[in-house]
Image (cartoon, rainbow, N blue to C red; front, side, top):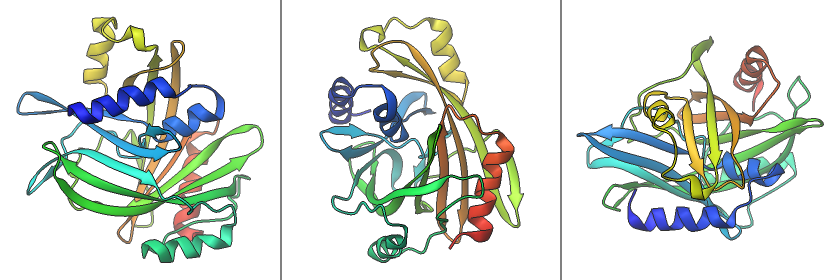
Length: 264
């Protein structure tokens, strides 16, 4: 991670409070990926700017491979929510689609009761390790809610032509000719003063386990499970994600199937 991104990341963590809905909104957007290239450690982080804090996107596929392009390595993905684009009216999604020139699959209400709450545009750029911009793209960030359950987030963006990550999904099911890939990732949140004091056992696990991550900046030690399903349809990448859900894997796959077969 270059010094500028690291400085932004560290200062942002000091501003964020990891509790309740704020924490979910934050870590919907924060992820870290460690990958090895030529014996060195590369960190890929995705940043979105919301209010005064910088947050990063967890729906960037968290995998063990290195993102490669003809012109170099994609080492960071910097993005921000487009100011003024948020809507809480489902029919307005068509306006957002027009704004980013992309047709997407959405539903207003899933059969299991999760219902559309909000949507907004985000703009992102891929950067090489030396800070050179490699590509720009825009997507949609949609939130679904159901009383008594954690929100479900649907991130939608164009399929990248320059990121080539290794697939480390835990299960794949086919919906017609669409491959839906499931992952359950464990995040260990630690206070900032724990950095440099983590046991070698945990560091080794993070190095070798594609689904275990450590993040510094919480008020206390805490573990959170993040569930993701990803799939591509007609050049568009979809990621359904939720935190500490009680939904079964079958129920989550049913939601993905509903998007693919009934979305419009």
